[in-house]
Amino acid sequence: TSPVIAGGSLFETRKLSPDLQSKLKRSWPNVETDNDTKLWEHEWNKHGTCSEGTLNQTQYFQRSHSMWRSYNITDILRKAQIVPDATQTWKYSDILSPIKTATRRTPLLRCKRILST
Image (tube, rainbow, N blue to C red; front, side, top):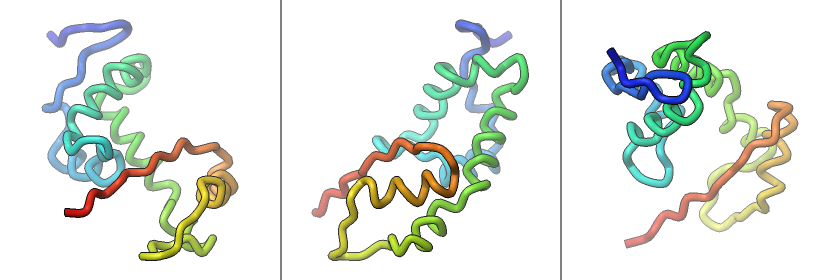
């Protein structure tokens, strides 16, 4: 049996098929470190276990990927003329506004600094 924590079972990587892991690497990457599995483990153990009466671990991550697919953030930003550019910068609100309009939700955005070598 799996160890149980506040409301559910602890994260088990083996419950995520290689195909689902590949999808999650795109839809739910760990942008702070390169350890995606650690992020998924944290998210499941902190949040996913509460859904265990309705969604098991596999279903929880399948649902998260489906939700990510339901909105094409790149397309939303492109329609607002926000595209990658070497010199152009945008304010947080410039990026937030079209996403909020399209999804009817307020996203939490973080920047990831890319260190030049």
